[in-house]
Image 1 (cartoon, rainbow, N blue to C red):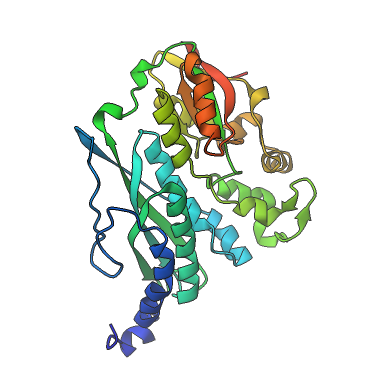
Image 2 (image 1 turned 180 degrees about the horizontal axis):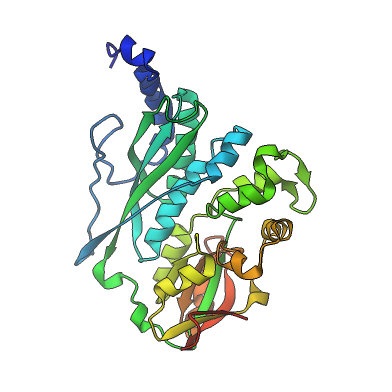
Length: 345
């Protein structure tokens, strides 16, 4: 790549040498994510990974893909780009764990108006941190410079992950029954959903995001940019400790859309609203935006980033296993027969 240069391409707005510099700068961050199974280095045409299939009778690959969404605009306004990569990884690996699968590797894709190598490397540093938290490897990615179609400071970060689970250990929702307990795994905040409404309510383009808020105990910008919590390690430990019957990642669509995704047709989720530990950012968002309560629960996680369904007899062991991974889960409801699929009372 030392002799790779195109003056004509550069005149059109694409600096391929900046791309090479970005790869060099991000290499130190990628190195943090190397785990057994990584076969290839950065720069090839594909990322190679050799999974350890020891003890698996019928390995199943599980994939997930997502992006950061318009939360990226908060990062751009604050010129702080080292955390949205965590969100990108989280949105993928938290979906994968809902099937009972352990994430193996991750690839990212960055579309950017102007390729500033240091900025791209900072974005990738967040992706690498997310991979470390999830215990998976960052084995490749792509940075695409889009002059003329994106403003120079704009970017869009997305990615995908692949995990693995033995078919016999794929979560079986049909084992669920009335009386089973619903556990809540606390969120770190809004995570990475509903930011179009967030940006409208707080008028982020014309608000001082760096102003301290006594109600939040931090600046509004800090609260809005708090990265999505990654639940992989707590959930893997929980699934080793007890028989988990269902897991829901509470993303866009909130409780009403995501809880039913792991429920058999004849069962419903009864949630005790008073038990939910809701961070201040949601209360501020609701009050300032005049948002009806149902819309809040139908858009945001409200403090519950993930729900886990176990038998009543296994609840204490499940909570202890999660606590051992610094995840202070708690009971918010139970499974019932019939009725509305999600009943918040």
